[in-house]
Length: 313
Image (tube, rainbow, N blue to C red; front, top):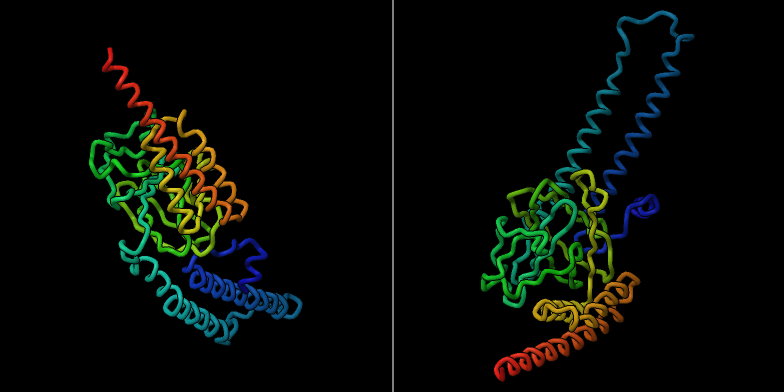
């Protein structure tokens, strides 16, 4: 059944939790097929059995067989079995068995019309303070992060809509929204969770395949809903660490004249992942890290020379 569903549009599955979810999907389709064939056959039977030519006069007593009642009861029992034996356990594991934060990569995703904003806690593993009062789209502070907060100084904010993850590691996404209800959906990871204003909802999964795929909004959220998409990029562990370290340095330097080469190489990392070349992406990530470190050294040297020039005058 699963192979048939893939042929009709079910995307490939690249998370450790996907097989259990796909099993439920397969059983539901099997049930729907049985119902479709069974009720279709029964409908055709009634058309022939009670045609006007054979029954010119209506029978006020009607059919006395209990076949329909028994079949409906059987369908109800089968649905209950699927719910209790398959659906409920899978649902419970998704909402209750959240892995320990110490053994997972914890990331915050803040939705807005019509973008996905991503926030990483940085090296200290602690998210800095955010406040709606600090949101300033013109200053590119889309989530209202307080850079004066000590814990926020090393937080990493990648380009809007780009979620970077390591392969084969538990991922916890803390999801919320700054405006209307959205729905965070990564079909290949079998992840879909509504984002509700004022609530931070955790959802989790474990990527098992490197590559790059689309993040969709599965909830109609406004007139430009069609534009609200992002990308999830799954790196090797070493490639992920190099990529994030590069982002940290680029953010610290905060000067495109110095970080131009590193940022261009980072874009090549994404291109390599989209092509399925995880090893090339890893090498490019380390190349970008080296370029970022050079940029940082050059920026510090230029700042020192400016200070010395100021002291002379």
